[in-house]
Structure formats: C-alpha cells, structure tokens
Image (cartoon, rainbow, N blue to C red; front, side):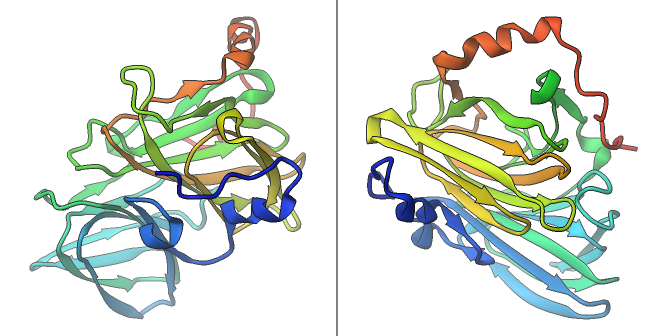
Length: 286
C-alpha cells in the first residue's frame, strides 16, 4: 500500500503532505494501517477519561507528572520539566484499556498507539528499564533511549526518543524501512514528533525515495509532527538549537530493522577515527 501519492522533486506543495501541525493522527488520516499519535495536556488537578479501544498505547510524559488509574490499579509517572531536562517515563496499556488520567502538576503527554488485538498487561517504564545510548560520531552524534524496544512485551508498538545536539545530523546515514525483507529490513510506519530548544529554532527533514521519484526537504519547528510512510530519511538540527524527536513505529515484524542508503555507507566507516560529540550525554538515566 502506498499511502501518499508519488511526488515530483520540484513539487514543493506536496511536501506538506508529510508534515502536520495537528495534535492527533489516526491510521486512517495518515493513510496507513497501524500507527497513531496524539498530544494532550492538563493543568494541575485536572483529569480526563479515555479508552484504548483497538490499540495498544504508550503514554509518554513529555513534561509534568501524571497519575493513571485503570481496573483498580494506579500508576504515577513523569519526572521531567520538559523533554530536554531528563529521560522519559511512560505507561504501556493494552487494547481495551479504559483509564482515567490526572495531572498532579501541569503536564503534557503523548499517546503513541498501534492497532492491535493482543492481550497484554499494563506496565510502567522508567530509567531502570533502559539505558541511554550514544550513536554516531563527530557531527552525527546523538543520544537515544528506546522506550519500547523489540524485546518489550507488546504486540506491534515501538517507541524511541532521540536528542540531537545543535548543529548535528541525526538518523544518519539516511535509512528506510518500507520493505519486508528480514533480516536486513522491516516494513515500519513511523511518526516523528519534534521539539526544538530555543526560541525560533528549527531543524531540517529530508525524505527521498528513488523508486517513487520523491526527494523533499522541509523545515520542522517545535511541536511539528511528520509522517514517514516510506523512503530514506534523515534530520539535521540547526546550529544553536538542540533537537528532540519522539519516534512511534509499528510494522510487519516487531523489529527496529532499517536499511541504510548504500551511497552513504562510507560515512559510518569513518566513525572509528572520530570522537563522539562531547555535549552528549545531555543527561544520565539516574
């Protein structure tokens, strides 16, 4: 299935088909099969009720502290003032979860979802459940936390947070995951939700697919969200402005297996002679 019409390189208007300023994305709106995304916020003392009908979800605290009650059980999580201030905490909920979420202080969170009918258990995820990974070298250094990795007991959903120091490249070399040919590539739908540090900051996102005659690049700003249905993709943070993005993925297999553009393989080969950017890690998991 090709969820977006092929675009010519010079057709800049169609580049906006990948980028949204909205706060809720459903699989139907995205034109694909599984992945959804939603942003919400509450002021201290407020609450709301939700139901994860046919989706497994991860509630990722972006800022503030949240308490979730479901089936007589309660979880409280969220310890950072914002996404640049510390590592994530999240709550995984299976399909069919009818829950109430309340803000202990002013809070914002992302609901990351994937269509599923699996029977699993709720689970709280915190710094004790993951390690902080440094990838790349030189000006391609970035910091990564895989919040819901492939080994997590979920059905389809995968969630990753990435921090890129100002002026650095991220998701480099460019990679894609639009064909199922394991063990070298998995077919994964993906959402990028961006936060940019500093007023007026931006980053650049490139998506290209020679098979579809597509090569588009566009600016992303704080709070933007992009859909990555197919194609190679990579991101660059503007100088002076660190970049964060939240990746939500789901696919045919539960694996973060991507295929790098062979044209840029030589860049990775040179990392052994380069130091990592001394600005990372931005924080520890403690």
